[in-house]
Image (cartoon, rainbow, N blue to C red; front, side, top):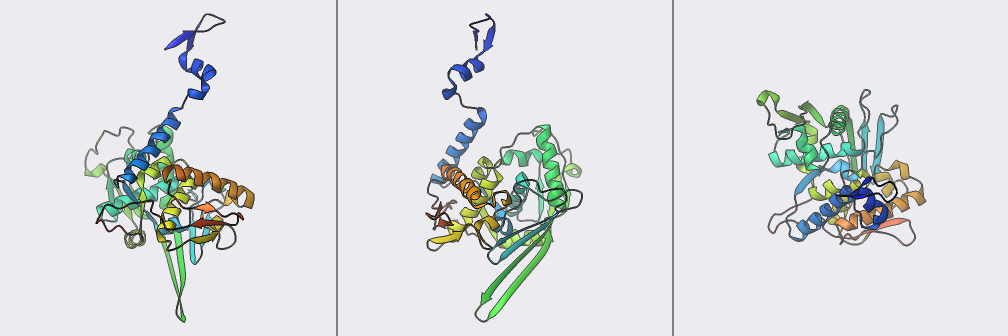
Length: 323
């Protein structure tokens, strides 16, 4: 559809006319896709028909870096009360960051579904489809790099707890994966030619044990909507777990050694005013997906207030539990 330009008598694209004269009515494909995704998340929750995924407890309690760390930074640490997460990156590939966090979610989900630490899937495009990502050359190269950073990383996860007069300390150091064979094919319809070309990822014993003993359910449709916003995704998954676990109203400080800023992977927003401003934006995005989310910044701006609520509504009799 097109119209004549008023000055030169040449054909002008309809999109240009709409953007110029009726800009307030124009919605980009990206915004329309996001709006449809939000509607689907809310509809499936209301109908208790959510598509369940799973993620690992260490990365719910303490987030991965949001943005790419400097090349010479190979150690990243986050703290959540008595939980400590340290990630050491491979010298060649660096630390996992940003959308790399989708890889552990995908692998944990597949491992729980298949009940095996040997995860099999048809194509790399399956991962991109799961999170609603495009399947172009740039996305495939990004996916290859993400697997390399995840494969090369070493995770240290520690907990401390006091039980009556005794103090218990638990430490675990492990890799995500022990072996990976992935074939990257841009044609999502093409099945593996033979078992020799199957996509196989073997999770480390420690990582598989962690997700098996402490699976954290996640709404995969919500993860898909937030796939390109890792900071909002981290907060959404964290609130899903924290609100479910809350027995009464809780107050989580924003700053300090036990603060929310130390738990999420958002060191870029460590300044109080900037972090609070971003937190308000992230919460607004989460409420579009989860209107009943009870989280809010306190009146004095020093804490996040949470209460019991469920972002994941199990089917009747399913017995869904958080790790």
